[in-house]
Length: 372
Image (cartoon, rainbow, N blue to C red; front, side, top):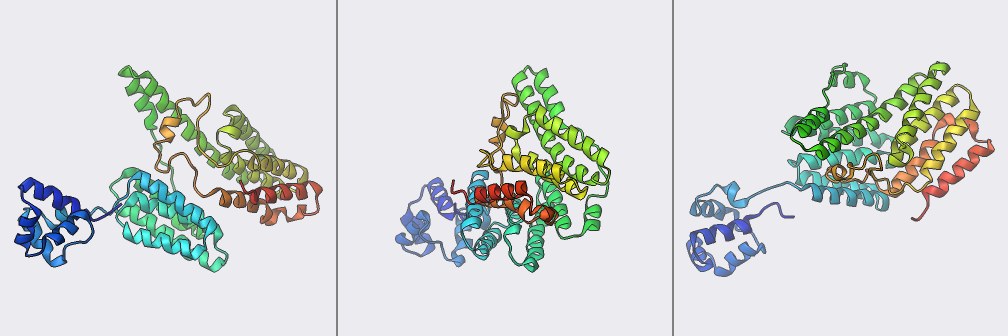
């Protein structure tokens, strides 16, 4: 993965002109061995030779160097997974320094910068010193801001904007988030319906079905981002709380979220548990924590997005995602996070002497240290 591709340019341009290495060496006033090393990538021409070489081949210095500080989606995926695994096995500061080095090297590769920012946010909880968390969030935010302001990719810019807003919330600056997002919701016309109609009109029925499946799937996932937040806001009105939870569970069962996407369902259960404990209902709190534990200690690892019998055309779309079908963070970190959500939640401290709660904690702890 070389960023400076001068070797290939020299070989191609020399062959286009129909000259030998000896002839190029003679023109440049160097040895044939030097030209050979340039063309095999063993060394680079001295910087003072670049204008002369560019002029000889009638190209710009940029074209000569073919400098491309970019990474392919595949390379970004591999790097992300590698660094994610490093977070679980190496000292935090070592991995953070590796991330910073890579970021500086590919500072104009905006898809990479976005993923590096996500990587930092996904591993903030590994920081043991609370005073070091805000600077790390700010570091991630700066990457998102750069993507938002410099990238030409509309999709990247939109994602970066939302992630910048997330950093604002994490930093305890809600007013900044309201200003960033204008404090309003803009009606959105789903592109899936338009694409599906276009595919259908051209006789491509399978593509139309696939696009609509993607739309349904994505909106279900978004729905389960809304449910927990709304559920918590209704915790002070038990009747409303129960109705929100009831409808959420009906939707989850209708689409078999326990198997399709357990990662979003656990958020609903843990939020419901928090709501019930705030209402002083220990019995229902323990029921929600039990449901949560059954999922996170089950056969769901490694967490991976996938289709099912209903979403039978989804997998081909998932394979094209920037980070493939794997969800962020390594399995060890995810398991520990699943445990900490319960174990380190002060709301559940009042349950510490309950036998069922002790059993739940024991299962979560065993799951967090499971070698597989």
